[in-house]
Image (cartoon, rainbow, N blue to C red):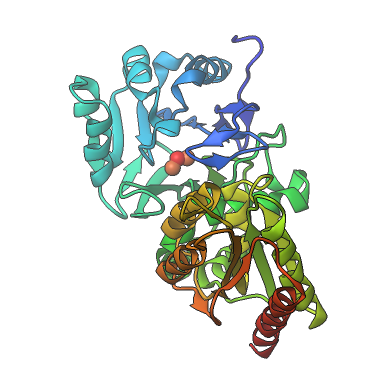
Length: 402
Ligand code: FEO
């Protein structure tokens, strides 16, 4: 592998030595249609230092890329910025192989790694670093910045002071397999979409902490030449743009657009969804109508990020909502999007409980319900469709008034 998998030089001292996962489709329930990367970095100083490792499956790729720069046995330090297994999965084997002088993690990281690899004596010896503590590598100095709950309790950033090089672990990242090393080389539209999808699906519940982190970075006057994330390309410019995206996504100021999500048995709930959309359109507001048969929960989470309205439709099946809707609400409820208005609709044949269940879920998500759910027995007639249209128009007027 050594001849085929090489490190990529980022600066005179920092190399990318990670792995590209072109085939990943499922990242714990998140559809990663464009694959991902597991980024690891090598710092060449008097103390040669490896920042993070990769998913276990890609251990040999990591070793091959390191070997294209230096004998892995010469690595002195390993830093674990975050202990989720996509970055730590091969850590025990890497420690055994290269026998570094020291391995470092945040205080919480020491505990979390020990819990991931119970009984592993190498992992048990990992040293804790302090928040804002430093580590001298020779010419370069590393500074550690705890970023608890962004997105794990043990998460931290590592920053090379002299190079203004920030290793941000999952923050500012995206699931995007690419041969482009830098974000500014990749398609801008794809980068924006995938960064937003990553935020919506991974970081959204921690938005308050994101805002504090952005404040902290400003207060610390942290100068930045590079942001090297654990997934996707590296940022070497446009930092204000990226921070602006994060600030916007964290605040979740509602945009004047609606998302209508539905599933359907015989087309009745679909027809209602279309009528709601027509009503929204009649007021000059855009909406997306997303059928759960063809839209993954993680893509819907992306659409709902900063939307103004979330309108949910489901027929009743065996006294329940459609199972795809239950899946969606379970997922979205955990992500806790904010500042939404909406209502429920759906068809039924016998009892029609889906509306009640949908409304309970909407309330659980703190969606402001704009009126009673709309029910259609078997097939919506003109009156029901008109009601769907009017309620859509009412939503649009509310969004316009913001
Ligand atoms: Fe990329 Fe939180 O692991």
